[in-house]
Length: 111
Image (cartoon, rainbow, N blue to C red; front, top):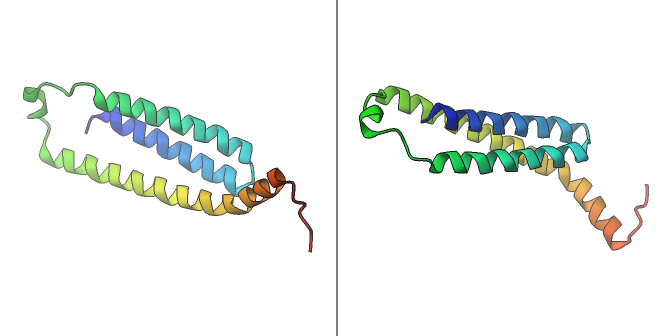
């Protein structure tokens, strides 16, 4: 895997972790801002991934073990992003329900 592509995955993971930190603190405006940063990073990753690869002669010089390790790193990063995303969604549920109620004009009652 191209080190540049791996750096995009790492940056997305960092933004995802920052989103989770903000969500845990109830800073939803910050979560939304960081989500926008993630969208931009994902777009840049897609663009970089579409660029032509190195010539076949250079690709043949990359050890298979290196490629496997890069794939493992990418997999671990993706797993952490998914775990972060799941927790953010869980934390957002009450906030989203409150937002739905507010938009529907329903008052919240305190018990």
